[in-house]
Length: 142
Length: 142
Image 1: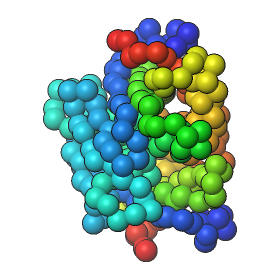
Image 2: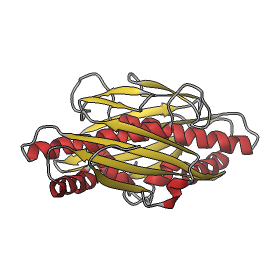
Image 3: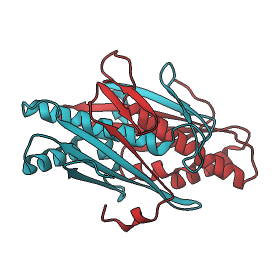
Image 4: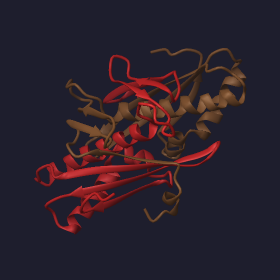
């Protein structure tokens, strides 16, 4: 927190987890979610899903801004896949974002994807990880 | 997705946002959250809070594993602060995690913090961003 950029923020928030993986995460005076391990069938979300929702919202919000600048209606959708890989004490997440932009040609869709990837704040945090990829798609397959 | 590591995962999930910042993010057959801009007072969570909940849960889950290996009870809590900074087309998030481990000496708490920072999957994704810091604390101040 010696970083002086913290003194000039547009917005600050916080989240807490004190219970562990089988527990809850919450924002004081805000959202609270039940969490559970992705490797059992207990009710609850998990770090993978929370990250996926964060990134998909950030990318789609960035695409909204780009659409607005191009005088387009909101035509984009973002799906983020997150995988858990590895073994004890050496686990990793893989993150893959798929961006679908209806009603524009392929070249435009790819240019908007690249711009969103470069501008989205969560995307910027992940881009040097080696585990994050983004692609333009015409539909969401399984 | 040419990365062959996707063929050998312990778990996969996905999240979708097609509505933008004032909308919803959801996991098919799973959690659905209302989202809104952090810069207005509409109801809803946002990418900052979702990322904070993801990281705090991942770090506290990693600390649970480390506690188990050290034959300690669950004594850790994690608070993650996320800030939104910058200006149009050049926004960034800052992420700062505070780790509190009660009932161990300062040196042990710092060693456990460092181990959690290195092992937690979300921490690994953020560590090369230049915008992510972690500290050991004895209590959560404001």
